[in-house]
Image 1 (cartoon, helix red, strand yellow):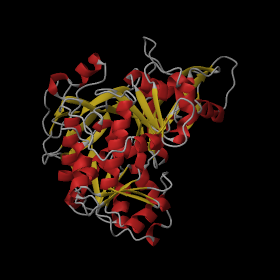
Image 2: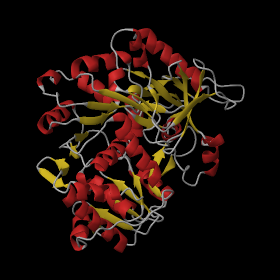
Image 3: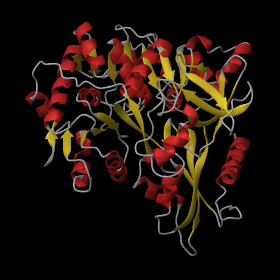
Image 4: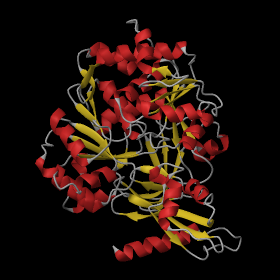
Length: 518
C-alpha cells in the first residue's frame, strides 16, 4: 500500500474535518488531498518518476506535510533535510541520495540557486514562495495541475518512501531506507501503543517535521485528526502553550529539551493546558527529576518512546499510566519502558547471544518497522542488520518485568536537544581552522540539552585562537546545533601506543568533573 492513501482515505471519510491549521489558514482534509494530488501530478510532469528521491527543506509548514504526501503519491521517496543545514550539508545529502528534485521554502531560494550548478543529479527546483531563475513556483504547479482526480501511484510494500539520514561514528551520514510497509506499520503501531487517536483529536507539531514529528504526522493523517503547526514555526514555550490553549490540543511530540524549556518558563501555569491527553517524548535521555517535575506541573500525560531512525519510533514505550511518582514502581521512571506491540527486542552480548535479565548488553530489535538497509552502504547494512536483528549501538539492561534501562551507547554519537551530532564531522571542520592542529569532540552532560558538544583542541605552535572564534568558525560551516558549546585548549591530547586519540579517556574526565560540580 502506498502510504499516500492514508491522506486519500482520510479525505473520503472526513472531507470537512480540518487537516492542517496554521495561524489564520485552515485547510480541510478534502482541500489538502486535492492540493496534494495536484502537486503529485505536477512533480510527475517535471520528470519525477517512481523510485526517484526528492529532497525537502523548509521550516515546519502545511506545505512540508503536503510535500511528503505528494512525493509518496507520485511513487517517489522523500529525503527530508534539516532546515538548519548549511549549503555544504544540503549538497552532500542531495548528491548522496541522487535526488532528482527538491522542494524548498522561500528562505532557501538563494541557497538553492547557488547550489544548482554543483549538484550532480538534482535538476528540478520547486520553491514554495517566489521562485528564482530556473526554479518552479509551488503554488503555480498546484494550480496548473488541479483536476479533481485522485493521483496515487501503485507501490509495493518494499518500495522506498523515506530516506532517513542518520549519523554514525565514522564516515558521512547514512540514509536509512524506510519503505511504505515500515511507515505503515509505524503509524498503526503509534495509534496502538502511544496515542489511541480519533478524528476528534488535535495534534500539535512543535518539533521538526523532517524528523520525529513527521512520523507523528503520518499517524495523525491515518486517523484523520486535526494537525496544528506553530505560527511562527519556531518553538518557544509561550508559542506552544498559546497553541495548546487556543486549539484545545490533545497530543504532541516533544524532545526532552523542549520539555525542559517548558519547565523553565515562568508563565507556564497561566495557560490552560487541560486539553492535553498525551505528550509523547523521546529522542534523547530524560532526567528523572525533570520528568517528575513535568508530571506534577503539566499532568500525567507523558508517554515515552525509544527508537532510532532505522526503526522509526518503534523500539519501546512507557505508557502515561506507568509514570508513577511514588512507590516501588517509581524506579521505572529511569527506564524507556517495554517492547512495542509487534516488535521483538533482545539484549545481546558481543557474540550476539542473548544475555540474562539484569545483565548489560546491546539493544537489538527485529520487526516490521526495521529499515531495509542503508542507502548504497552494503557493509554498514550487513554490520547493522547482522543475524536479522537491528543492532542499535545502545547499551542497556532489561529487568525481570521486561522494562529496558539504557546505560550508555557503544558509539560516540552525541544527542543534544534530541538532535544527533556526529563528532568526526565537527572535528573535520575544526581541523580546517588554520590555527588548529588536533581536535577531539564528545558529549558532556548538560541540564538543558541532555548533552552538550565539547571540543578539546591543540593549537599549532605559536598559533592563537579564542573559544569564541573557534565556535563561530564551526557555526559558519555546519548547522548551529553541531557547533561546540564550549572549547578547551590543551598542549596534547591523550593517545594510545598506536597514536589513536583516547576519546573515551577525555570524555570520562570531563563527565566526572561535570558530575562533581553538579
